[in-house]
Length: 75
Image (cartoon, rainbow, N blue to C red; front, side, top):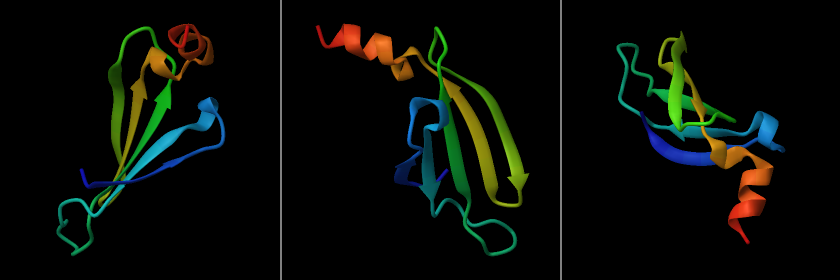
């Protein structure tokens, strides 16, 4: 999967995590993973795809990205 690199995205709508330097692939490149985070009632992975060799794309749902949920949790 790789090592944590950064959060990217300016808003909750395009928030994603980046992982670099994963396992070495057959072409001597290291795997990279981009995890898009979107709102869902449960925390779960809903999609994993290899978009190109050594580049993985994942969509993860969680209610933790809901602005209202986070505001309520601070009370």
